[in-house]
Image 1: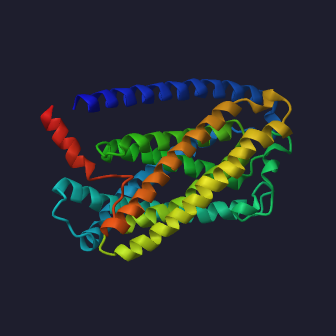
Image 2 (image 1 turned 90 degrees about the vertical axis):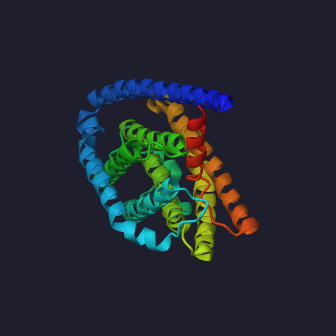
Length: 333
């Protein structure tokens, strides 16, 4: 118990330091954006006010998420049979997760299709993602004063609204989940990465980043739909698609093409370092996301090993069964 207390204190300290780092970078970002807005009033440089609709979208998505969970509850009860080793709390958490997975599957499927329609003919969309362009185009055409297409702007607004809604939903309904901490880091990092890339006009490379994540999230939430059901072999087939999509998009395209683009192509094509303000922070956030995805991919591999060795499907990322252990530790304290 004492070791767990020390571990929790260390993690809380790291999380607080990370938050301070984010706030500090937000202040710097605001100063740079304000300076650029004054220099380029005629080009329509990105504005903080552009994100005002994201608040309404976040409210709508939070309510829609809640509605989908309620609507899917009878379906979840019919396809997820309670196991003897599950407490009532764990069973209800799994029923709840089923509805959340349906909501996220709907959102990411619709959003990914729309985002691809916007990006498919973009000159910076590489062949590895179904385009015919080059990532080097992210840094040309007058960067950082490139024109932001209205359709791409709305993709940013909707994506930001989604991540804000996820943070709100977790704080309201899922604060006691075992994966609460890592998911909050993921959601806040993703939300700030969107805001930062927009306000610093890293919109081209930023759009590639969230296309990679949104596209691979489709299979992620499809497997979360089936993992606790009786359809084990369907779950395993979907699981293989998760391994393939994450391996290709998050562990190959992200580092080999997108992070390579932000680290090396940007420096080669933008000789003026002043125009690359926020370069280090943007790359730091990308590396945080990459490390999280490496960690989650290891968990995915463990899930496959668990299935092959024991014949059981289990979501080790969410790890809802840890809720009972956590409750026991609280009682001992």
